[in-house]
Image (cartoon, rainbow, N blue to C red; front, side):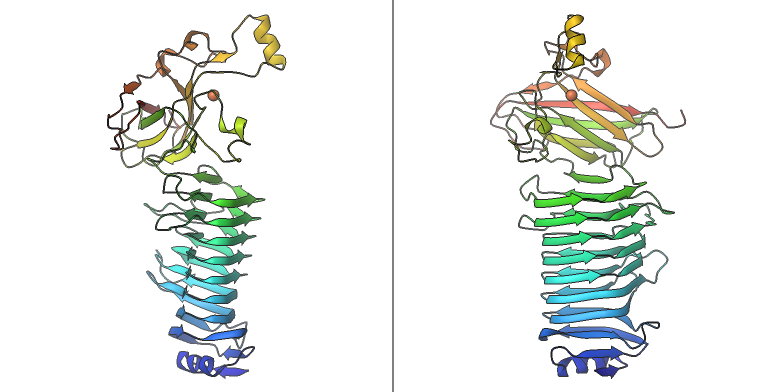
Length: 430
Ligand SMILES: [Fe+2]
């Protein structure tokens, strides 16, 4: 066991250490520490001399390091900085840290793990930060039993990492500012090259608390399904008081949401306005529809390997717009095997529903709107089994020939349909 009291002494002690050693830090600040190229088969432990008065790491950079345990330490994050940045390293454990920002409106991140293997962040508090914990292109990550509080943007976010466990963390009191889009846990594929696999998000607790609205678990593939998540498990999480859906596995505007189900391409563009005709920015759009044979994804779960298809959660842009590509739905019969079927038969009603697309809008300060849109040439338009079809919900779809240009700029070599529609939301108080 070696005791040190400055960053320089800590650096020297690590260079002299052998596997299994413990380096003890006297209370005080350890500023601007960069550690490179030290490999320990048995980890070296770095910890505070007095767990009641934690030594403070004021930015720590680890590059190409192996076999370290950081335990009972504080990490100070000044605005715009990253508290701890780990890259190209393996077998690094952070346990019982206090990671905190210093600015009133922090933009910094707590811990960032990149291109590393076997990094654990455990029993750690993250607070007063822009983002708590970030990861990129890493593997064997264990982020468990941490607390995220007073965070502006995201608790844990990142992409391209596989074999990731995010378990039993607590997220509360997030306080977004304009432009922030806070999620407790977010995964993306932006700037990643391979499908992330074996991700388990389990037993986490997301509570809005005294903070502003936040989203729970948000998993997106911005590559339009080119980098699908493989073996993603989301179980036993609790989301209370969140914005939008607590848990969303989704795409971004402009994506192909067909989930690979074949059919005639459909390009939907929508605008969400208030009753004065002003765009509603950031409205949440939940949309879903059947395939060209009248089946929803959930009715063909085996065929689709339990993957979601022909549904999306989207957000309107600064002009109140949202858009996606999918396939055209078809009419379908409602189930006729139960009492519903008996009533339909007794009333001599057709069980058929005309083809439609479902929409469910939510926006802060507005009444929710749940609606469906139809096309004018559907054979069952006048005999909708559930009386959903109304004149004001019949769209004006445009049929396009092969060689026409779609709204996203692509030229298609097959026929396709475009639909544009404007939705109006009523203020909660109206
Ligand atoms: Fe439907």
